[in-house]
Image 1 (cartoon, rainbow, N blue to C red):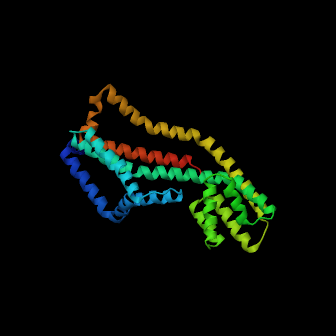
Image 2: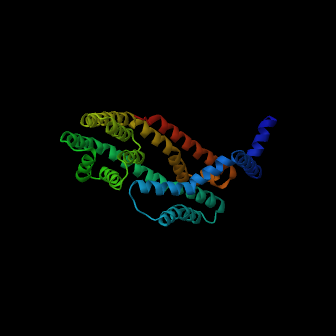
Image 3: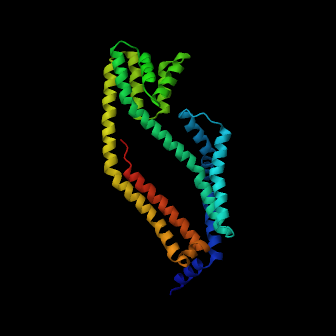
Length: 299
């Protein structure tokens, strides 16, 4: 064995050298990227709670900021402490896993409400097909845009009924229709909604055939939905493959832990093993994000 390989093997096999080297690398990275790290920590702490409150407000969910904070504290620090107690008396493993669970679960409420908000936006866009048809018929019958929106609010379920109701409420208290519709476009940031808002605002000022415009919007939404469903069908195999590939390492680790626990024990009892686990998790996350980016196609 040449001297370089011998030196590397001694460094890797010595826990008292691995830990200081990793600590020095972390310090250097933290020093060079301190501003970005501080901004990231703010986004991952108070920023997460603020985003959850914002999403709940967009979905017309009335809540107390204190309750949201308590929910996030229990779901993160509570579960982290529970995992720490599960691995007791192994303090090192318990601390690492407990901190990991705490950090991960602090972001889970935001992901849940983000999913619910995206689902609400999708439902609103789907309802626009019937809503635009109803408004086009109302315009042909001689009704104004505001009266047509009232018909949609009274005859269709949420979320389109809630959103149109908020627009009408803002108009009734003296706000302009254009500003109220712009707020609607900000609450539901979808291309179809932006197209509806832009068309109504422009035609209200310049004049034009609103009924034909609403029918065109309806046709555009239907065609977009057809393309999205076709893309979902074509990328379903890639999504499934990505999930399977991501879960295989965890499945193999669990199988080895059941068949021969002593074989995987160094991964959890040595500094080099813990470092290897972190590298594995980081590569899994990067691979999963790359696969998701490849199979997700925006229409």
